[in-house]
Amino acid sequence: MRNKFNKVVFIFLLTALAITVKAQTAEDSIKAVINKTFIGMKNSDTNLIKTCFTEGAILQTFVRQKDGKMGLTKESLTDFCKAIASIPKGMVADEQIVFKDLKIDGSMAAVWTPFKLYFDGKFYSCGVNSFQLVKLDGEWKIQYILDTRRTNNCD
Image (cartoon, rainbow, N blue to C red; front, side, top):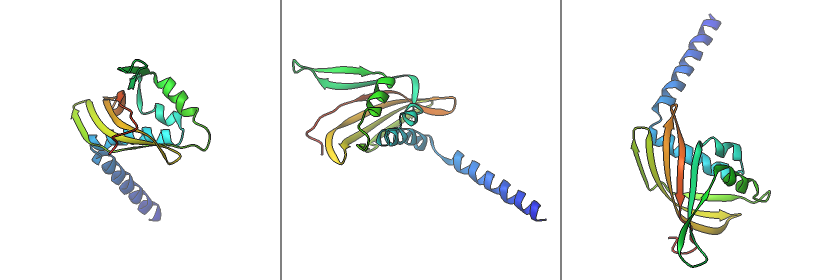
């Protein structure tokens, strides 16, 4: 009798878990993968970061060049992870974002997140991240990030 009761409880728990997983919306899943990226940054966990991106992901940043004009730099996911891994032990990179706009069309999503970046609690920069995500094999992944960076006009 007890064994039968345990089986019923086990099946109930599995069903509840399946319903909970299915209940997560596309928007929730997209936000989760973006948040996971920043958790990885904060914890210098490059393995976690890599799980958030497609294999051919592109990372670009607007930067002011020596001649004063704005230009774009391009960084590979590998280089980004090397930069995260090179943050001195004990120093924390805490990028705080706000989900401002999120658009979804089938297996494609665009997300706009203003941010403020802190190193060890000290303000470093602010700007906006523009994410492009794709849903591959049932999982949302970041394909492209374009961000701005500045140290003023952050509010």
